Length: 158
Image (tube, rainbow, N blue to C red; front, side, top):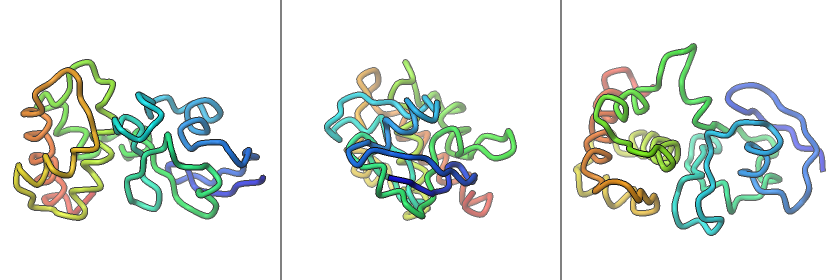
């Protein structure tokens, strides 16, 4: 099946199989390996990407659903070589350790910040319940999301 969509702001036309997953398409066929696959069952959140600005778990989303859509991966979150405010917040607040879950955390957090620009720590923890980090106690991740939300507010939503 021929698929037309935007990937990180650029038009893409590619043939896909009906059973091909978004994670397979971006990692294996398009070479964007920032989207990680940790579980293949939609449990860990390492594979989160944005489809039409909403976070989705790419390891269980069929690529054919991208027809006419806009897909943003962690590689496309930064603009013109400048980190997105949420990426910068994770860096500045030490919201990562091994880094495996970080792209999915950041993508999920950026979507959440658009939905709730002034969250409480408890609300952040609830939103990120679908993202698993095996390295941390989540304290720095929550601090990063809160800082990222503040930075996104200050920059007009980035």
